[in-house]
Image: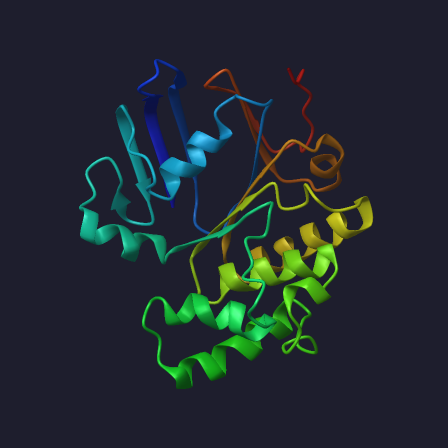
Length: 229
C-alpha cells in the first residue's frame, strides 16, 4: 500500500513542490496520477522510490516508513517497487534477455532463478521471440514492453509507470496501457503517471489530479480536465 499523509516537500532552492498531499493507494489498485507540468508528479515518484524524504508528513510504501527509513533498508524497499520510465533506460549493448536478467543480477539472484524467471516475464509482455535482439532492433512499443519486463522481473508488489506512453503513437499507447491493465489484473498495484487526457479517458480507473502541489481531485470517473501551463 502507498499512503501519503499531509506530505509537504520543499527543495533547497525554496521551491515548495508539495503543500500537504494526502492519498492512499490500496494493494492491487490501478490509479492514474495526472496534472500539469510542475504540479508535483515527479516529486511524488521520488518520494515513493525513496529518492527524497518529505519535509513534513508521512510516506508509507509497502510496509516501509520512508520519512525515517534507514539507508540500508532502501534497497529492500525498492525491490517492492518497479519503475517504468518514459525514456526506457535500456542498456543498448545488452540483449533483450540480458537487459531483464541484469535487474535480477544486481539484487543477487541465482542464475537458475534468472533462467526460470526471465523467459516467463518476456512471454508475459510478448517479447519471447525477441530475447536475442538488442534494444536498437526493437520498435518503440517493443522497447517499452522491455522496460516493463525489467520492472516486473523481481516480482514487485507495485509498479510506477512514469509517462509510459509519452514516446509512442496512439495505437502503441493503447497496447501498452492494455498490458499494464493485464499486469494489474494479476495482482500488481499500478500507478500510472501521465498527462495524456485522451488515454486516461479510455480507461475507467481512479484518477488522482494534482495541481500546484495539492490533490485537487480524486475519483473513479476516469475523466478530468486541467489547463497545462
